Length: 361
Image (cartoon, rainbow, N blue to C red; front, top):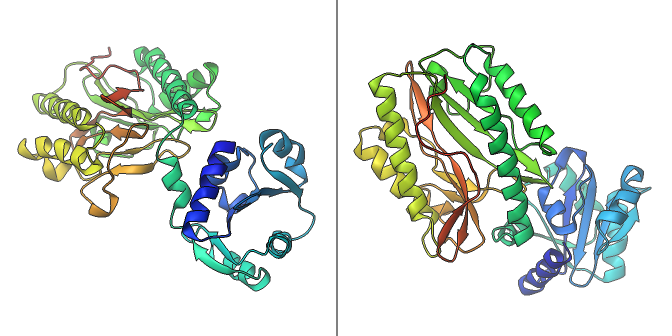
């Protein structure tokens, strides 16, 4: 993480900022703080100047912070964080201090501005820009999470028919834990039968039946990094319309994956997918974006959509998912998703479950 802080300090210097305050108390957990410092506890503040970094935390994490953040000076908070930061600001003669305007609650910032004598400036997602290009160790953590998640799903697939969605989700989590996942990457999504028309179907006590499509969106977490993958499979022969939908989604996903390469844009990926689904007559049934980056957060830049404000030129080292879907109320739906890392020659798939049409009996 020392390299991350150095790069961040260079960005502060180039932006005319004397420092930045990254806040992550209990109510404001911040993956940006973890990215910069390596700290994995639930409550801390990070003050970064152009030449130094200070991690402020409470008694619960003093020893942990010293072990995880050797590049930071650890300050053991026994008084208000604002007082501590105000003292550092005075000691370092800081004038312009950046902060995360999109994350810090107004009441918290008002307290800071009353006690800390600086000119406050928005960071404008400076840390998120750093996080776009993943280090090799970050990619390996995502790869490990994807392997754990994929192997776990393939373990539980054989026993889903006749069982509740909730029970299948629990089996999947236990399998991931046994393989070394520190947690789920996010809450597992399972939509069987007609519930497959819900893009984010939380598991229920519905019993999975033979002869329907089932969508499972799942992921594991390793060293803070998440995986993200979706499989839609059949539990026996399904209607021609459902099989047609699945085939269109598979064709669209293949086109999207082929569009992922350096120099293309995230919008290009979305267009490749959306064109196929639209030409097949199901454009109105694909209402979400095509994909997103994956890392410490399950949804991070770049985002593949038609929104021009989200358009991002793809570069080597970025991650992105490709996850088209078609959803028809009263019938069901299908979605296929893989997580990719962009390479010099295109993209490498990090997720491992085959996306061929599978019938699980």
